Amino acid sequence: MLFMSIFLNGPAMGASLKIISPNGGETLVIGSPVKIQWSAVAIKEKVRLILVKGNQEIGIIADELKAKPSSYSWTAGQYKGGAAASGQDYKVRICTVKNKYPAMSKGFFTLRTSVLPHLQQAQPSDKVHPVATHPPVISQRNSMIRDISSPIKITSPVANERYKAETPIPVKWDQNSVKYPELHLYLLDGQGNEVERKQIPNTGQYNDLVMKEDYTFPGWKFQVKLVATKPGTSDAAQTGSSGFFTLRSLRETMTLKRTGSVKNTFRSEPWSDGHEDCLFAPPLWNGRQPVAGEIKIGHSLMEGKYKKCYYSAAYYFRGHAHFDFNEIKGKEIIEATLSLTDSGYEARVPDGTLATNEELITKCEIYLDGAGFAQGVIAGFFPPGEGNTRSVDVTKAAQYWAKGKPNEGLLFKHTLEKAKFVHSACIKYYKNLRLEIKYID
Image (cartoon, rainbow, N blue to C red; front, side, top):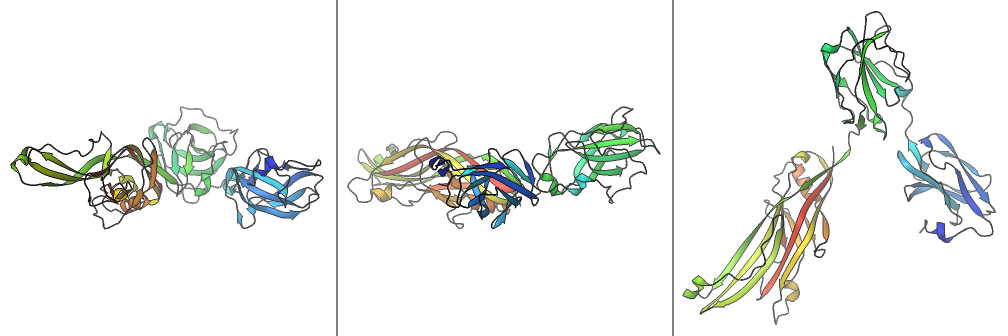
C-alpha cells in the first residue's frame, strides 16, 4: 500500500519532495558517512527517509526530520533496527511522516563492503619464500614489465571458472616453458591491480593460493600472472597470464535439478463365487495403463458376471519415483521442491451410498520409498487440475538422504486404504516429475 500512494497522493497546492542524492549509479561503502539530499517545496510536516531494496522497504533510515535544511548525514547501510547487506539494488524513499508526497531515487545505487586494505597496498605473503630484493613491478595497470621472451603457458586457473573461497586454487603451468630461475606469482584484480605476490619454485604446479571470502563481492574478477626473471634484475624475461576467474562464497547456495525415473505397482484383491466359469472371466476395468514417465495412484473396486460366475476385483495403485542425488550426501539441505503435472483422472461413483466423498478422495500422500511408513507422511497435496503443475515441499526427504540414509526414492499413494463400495474408483495420473534441491556447498 505504501507504494500505491505514489500514484494516489499526488502533490497538492504545489507541495512536493524530491530525492537529489543518492539518485542512482552511486557506489556507497557500508559504514561510511553519506549525505542524503532532497528538495522540499511547500512542505510543512516533518519527513521520513526509508531504505528500499528492489521494491521492498527494509527499514526507516531517519524519522521526524525537518523538511529544511534538506539533508541528512547517513551512515551508509544503517537503518533503525538493522544494517543492510551488500547489494546493487538500493534506493532511498522520502515522504512526510503521514506518508504524503512520496518520492524515491530515480535509479538504484550500490552498497558494498569497505575496500580491502590488501587491495590498496599489497604486501608479500609471509607463508612462502621471500620476494626477491628487486621484484618485478606489477602494482599498477600500466605495468613497466618488459616481456622479452616466449610466454609462460598457464593452464589453471581456468577462464570464467568460479573457485571456492578459503579453498586452494590450483595454479598450473608448463614448467618447461619457464627459462629463468626466479619465478613470481601475482594475483591481480580485474583492473590489473596487485592483490598478492609470492615467489614460488618452478614445479609446474602451486597449491597454496587461497583467497579469503572477502573477495566474493559480486562483479569482482581476478587473474594469475607468472613472471620469470633473470637473477639480480627487476626486468621480466617471461610472463604468462591465466584467464579471468571469480570467487564464490564458502557457503554458497547451490541448486541441483533431477528428473525422476518412475515405476508403478499395485496390489489386487480378487473374489469369485468359485464357479468353473470364473476361470474364463475377463479382467474387470481398472483404469488405463500409464504412459512412459507417468505414475498412477488410487483404487478401483469393480464386480462382474460371466455366465454363471459372479466375481469382483479391487486394485490399489501406487507410484514410485527415484532421483539420483549422490551429490548431496553430507550437504546442508535448505529446501527441496518436487514438481509434477496432473495428467488425468478416472472415477466411478458408488451408487446408492452415502460414502461418495470418502471413496473419491484425491489427496496424494508422499512417503520415503523402501522405508516402510515408519517415517510418516513426508508431504501431501491435492491435484491441481489436469494440465496444471503442482509444487510440493519434500525437504524432509532430501535431508534424510543427505544424512547418508538409503535413497530409494518417493512413494505416492491415495489416503484410502480399503474400498468398501461397488462400483467405486478414484484414479489419478501424474507426469513430468522433477526435483530441485537447494543446499549449501
